Amino acid sequence: MFLDIDRFERNHIAIHDDSNTVVTYGELSDFVQVIAKYNLKRSIVFTLCGNEAGALAGYVAFESCKLVPLLMSADIDEKLLDDLDKTYEPQYYWVKETESGSFKGKKIYSCFGYCLIRTVYDFYEINDKLSLLMMTSGSTGSPKLVRYKYGNLENNALNVAKVFGWTPKENCIMDLPMQYTMGLNVINSHLCVGATVLLIKSNLMSAAFWDFIRENHGTNFTGVPYSYEIMLKLRFTRMKLPDLYTLAEGGGKLTDDVFKTLADYAAQNGKRFCATFGTTETSARMAFLDPEEAENRIGSIGKAIPGGRLYLVDDEGVELEDDEARGELCYDGPNVTMGYGICKADLLKDDEWNGTYHTGDIARRDKDGFYYIVGRKSRFLKLYGLRISLDQAERVIKSEYNCECACSGNDKEMYIYVTDGEIAKELPGFLSKKFNIIASTFRTRVVGQILKNSTGKIMYKKMDESWENDGQQA
Amino acid sequence: MSNKEKYNDVFKRVFLVDDSQLGDGFEFGKIKEWDSVAHMKLISELEDEFDIMFDTDDILHYGSYANGIKILSKMGIEM
Image 1 (cartoon, rainbow over the protein chains, first blue to last red):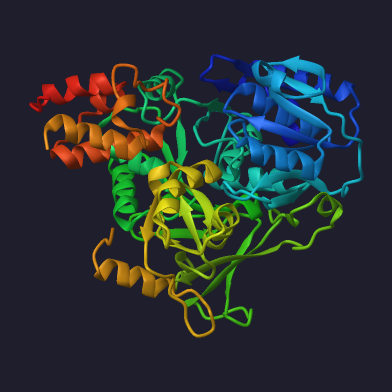
Image 2 (image 1 turned 60 degrees about the vertical axis):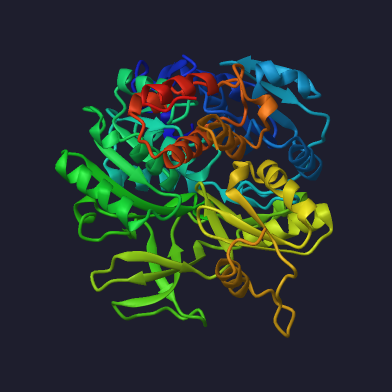
């Protein structure tokens, strides 16, 4: 059974969601057994996730029965879902019972408010190692999937549980979406030790969230930088949260100020602050900063988690041996996935990465071996914890509006340069829908022309500078 | 610009709506776009616009366009 969940105390709670469903380890194991009895052929299951026990239990069952889920948000853009459906021809859907009317096919089984639907698609061969498919960022058009192999999730769960020291006594506060790589890792790293997952749908800015975690004694919280911005806005450092002992962070870089505030708050209040680092391509976590070090190493992502190795390479891909160094951050470990997939045929592909991943992040290593992310090799932003490719954003805009554009920005906002004011008006709403991010994140800048150098490359820096120098032209 | 106009402008910026959509029915839970990200943005923009600082409870129980007017009035901003 996935993560050997059947070895835990049957009456202990595995999942408790804020829609009032409670599932014990015994009930979860029984549910997996029931699905197993159907002897379903190896297939792709589009799993439409909300943070609810039913969605999570389904995923646990599919992993146990060697079906391959593709996790996606239940709020996925309809057109995108349609594209994915046509591209991958999934044999099954696992969806909320109340939404099942929108899906064609035969309902096979229902439990915890979710149901399994057999589609009309035939079975096809997929690679024996393939265990899970995840989407990269909020993406669009032809989204790139990450292909996981058996052992990725399990290894990362155990190694992360080990480095945090999780025990069955933990009640983790999970408000990150379960279809988001780090959210999934938080879940797995608790299920693999028999702890309780408090699976939360209500948002951090609602009273319901705080009531739920107090009533259910949440002991640890994992947030992306944006979660902590919200929590600081709520002045949570003044709240009484006696059960909350661990604050973990990942999914992007905190500002040094916020990092320091959290490290100091933890130190002064008998709690611990753990910075981590991960990507979808590595089944989430690669690095962990010992909380004892947090106050003295502001901004660090720490060192490799157990079972993994972090290192730096130069532009030629040669490993940098000096203690102190700067280069592209690379990782070797059992949680490195197999590669990407963009079409059905790719699901037959074997392992292309063989345990090594180049992150595309530029990092610095200090003399004691701690790593710090300092920049990026490729053009992408991390908006609300999601990795958004600027080149992809440009492609999406060009294909919809057939116009020239240039995208730049920072980890708070994307700037979109266009020459047509009418298109500019539509862009925030359009991109919001495509990337599933609030429209005001997208700032349009109408300019006379998209600046290019002699080889035809867009001069992003120059465009940003001239916009800022000339004031905000209308 | 009156306080009411400033207040409406913040909502219009955050939710990309126009005046006609703002009113009693504009509530958290009813408006799909009103998630935590939008709420954070709303609170930050209101704090900047009116040079105020909300209490935790006011942020958590903001609830609606109409209730927000009450909260602001409690803080001495009349509309």
